[in-house]
Image 1 (tube, rainbow, N blue to C red):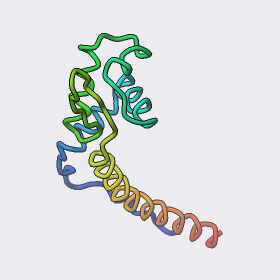
Image 2: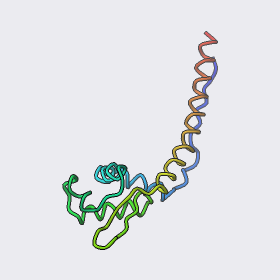
Image 3: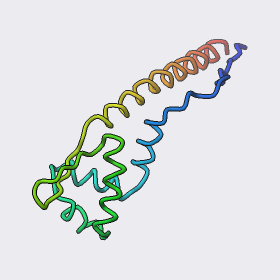
Length: 122
């Protein structure tokens, strides 16, 4: 019978404050709703607030978090603050997912090989 060596992380993962902040920003349903709305194109803060049922101040606070992590860009044109999707934060998330997917796939490949060897030995 073949033995399966399970590799466990022997070291603590290196903290990545940017990724932590990105996941924090995406962890809030209101912020995800804002991103969903902005995926349709730029819009004003006041238009974002209406369907969310929150105050302009609350929307501004959510936007500040999204802007800090590079998911949203806001600019003031006259008296109107307009928001749009920013791609920098999404690129960082995509890279993190790609990096981790490779490691996860390699682990699953090893598990698949082990299970195939077990079936062959029976």
